[in-house]
Image (cartoon, rainbow, N blue to C red; front, side):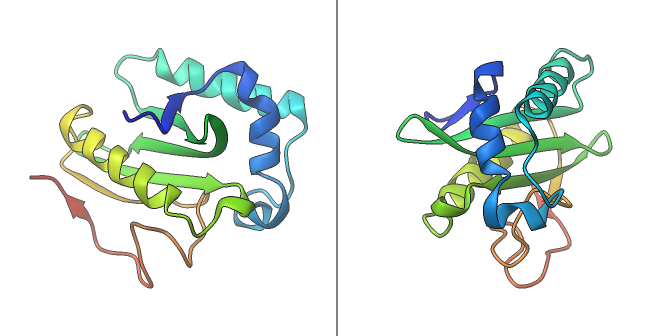
Amino acid sequence: MGDDLRALTLGNAPALTRIYSGASGPYTTGKPPPLDQAQEKICSALARAAETPRAQWSWGILAADEMIGLIALRRRSPVMGTISYILREDTWGNGYATNAATQVVAFAFTTAGLDGCRPGRGLRRPDRCPLSGPRPPAVLTGP
């Protein structure tokens, strides 16, 4: 992954709470998680990273070494995955989600061994999803 995506750590919990606040909230749970719930979310992602076979990958999206978002790839079948993301609202419109999604799609096809990806539910702004445009595509397929 590029320098703008990083594995999650428990130290990211305050940033995760901020990411889920404000205008980003209605696209997910509706309210930001308290710090302990953000830590639990990260612990769950770290536990899923240790599973074999692996069914989910999660990364923090960075800008100037600050975590501004979260992106996840989930294996939905042996060959199909979904990608979802959330960005802190003050970073919308700068291409961060598009850049992160481009990297994760490449990872899905090359490293995770998937043959196709589609936008996931939640964790994304439906009107700005770089994978969907105005209408969701059927599927992005690999080479």
